[in-house]
Image (cartoon, rainbow, N blue to C red; front, side, top):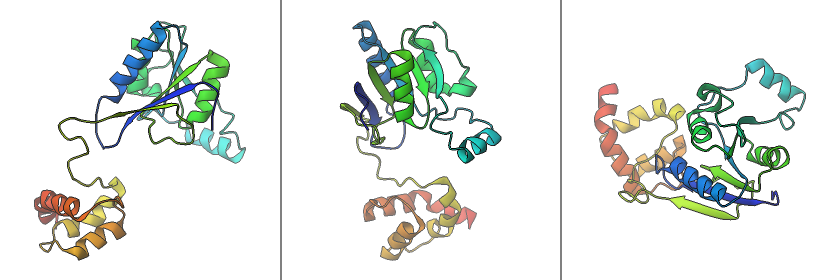
Length: 212
């Protein structure tokens, strides 16, 4: 999807902090000072979700696309329009630190972008942690890396819901190809290689043994 304005996505390739939000703030400030109308689009990580009954009604009545996003800053107010509990910590901080820049929260960043352009007059959209959001076409991608571990530590990232199923495997004394296949079948990242598997097993072996 293209929205007819410049879209800059800022993100990383590894799990963990690489300073995405401060870089978004730097970009937004420079663009604002250059005379651009900037809107920051955020997913709103850890923001308070809408009431369950409202979400269900919106879904049943196919209103999810028409429900406006949360506007943390409209670009004109000098203080955030929502508190951090509703907006999420990072969008609230960006709105507080960047008077003159709009901050909009919605999981659907195409919808948020359209709103920012139409209602808030944005001519540049910054996607905070938006590198993997490919539904909205990016004009530029800014990829951040941790210089101490540019492409990760070799450890596996396991979804929280999968952890209980991995305890017995993590306590296993035999770290062979069968373990690798079992890791992949249970649902870890499909690009993991043998080295990363073994390092993850070594790291978690003590914890797994205690749990077992």
